[in-house]
Length: 479
Ligand SMILES: Cc1cc2nc3c(=O)[nH]c(=O)nc-3n(C[C@H](O)[C@H](O)[C@H](O)COP(=O)(O)OP(=O)(O)OC[C@H]3O[C@@H](n4cnc5c(N)ncnc54)[C@H](O)[C@@H]3O)c2cc1C
Image (tube, rainbow, N blue to C red):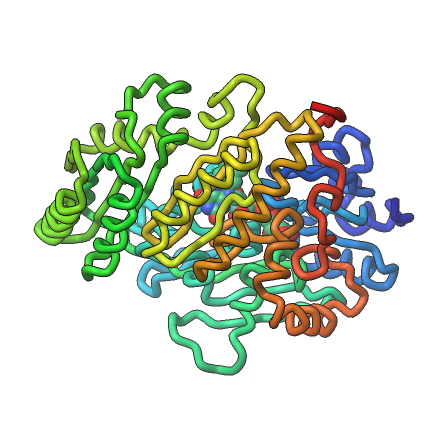
């Protein structure tokens, strides 16, 4: 544990905003990943000047600082591997400006995604990257991980909607990066460098974000496929046909079985289901695109194709996909859904072969793996369903993870398309990005010479994710 001056921190943020109570430390010791490590203290700043003062103090004393939003990261992003200060940014949660005429808003980092969208709705606008965790995740965390969601296929990820940032650097200096306009050619794209930096380069204290007009019309189609190959080819054909769907979600047979078991939805027992959505301002344009999609599905042996623009029916179609994540934990007795190898991205034409191989890898390694996700942008989510209390299952999972990433690399894909790297995915990223690791380390050293900001993550994380920290589960030896 790091020795630190709690009184000094209390002076900066007030005594109610500092806690070294064991129950609080425990809560902040993990996120939505498999990892766990105790912080020394939790500090909740309320304004930029406080963040600056905390960082000046931490930098002088070489104390780790881990910025944290909602702690919904899936790879150990906010797990304080070296102890230190967990900087909970949720108190900084003001929406500072909404300027529909400029297609932008300015917010503090602790604003929750859904709250921002609730505030934008009366203006007829929305903030497009909508992670499934939108009801809890913060803008700061979304910037930290370059989060995206099911509509990234049309609107892009967080990196595509961050126009500018105010960032407190490791030494406490405040810098303004980027601008208020969609185009910007004024030097290095430093705001973009912060996006996806997982709290390792600076603390975001304000963000200027691009917002989009709410579409007036929306329609959805669902299609079943007996062969994965047909489903993959249908997605690839839709995406290369000039149509821009606002959502393309695939669910494999494991996912279908899980939602049927958990929710009794009675979805057909097929190899894959795809849900498509199109949206826009002109009804005829939306209908035209939907008709083109259903035709492509038919041409690729899709069956049971249904198209609707009825909001209730659309909600019913999407229910299984929406509730998939919690449903997976009910797939089998004693099997827990773990976020490992959970969000790779592959070229769109390789989706079917990737999903097929994921199933083969699972079989070879004695675990169950589902494959689903925002496949229109090549994103495949997997969850490894395993008994996390058995040591042998961690060995199985480790092999399955390594084989999955090896395969993803072999077809030109990437380790993480959505959730980021942190601890669990660092070994795979280090192999995939070996040419640029030193460049990342050089940038990190230049901005954070004392290595206080979320240290030992991504390019500097340990090589074995199972021993990088304590695992959150009570693991027993043997079978
Ligand atoms: C059920 C569930 C569903 C999910 N669905 C999606 C999804 O659809 N799409 C998706 O992309 N992700 C998804 N996620 C993952 C996660 O929710 C996202 O990565 C989210 O953006 C994290 O936000 P957070 O506020 O929880 O950040 P945290 O987990 O607290 O932090 C994430 C990273 O950002 C850094 N950070 C936080 N605040 C700041 C700041 N102010 N300045 C600098 N760095 C900061 C942290 O240090 C950390 O490295 C899901 C997670 C869960 C549990």
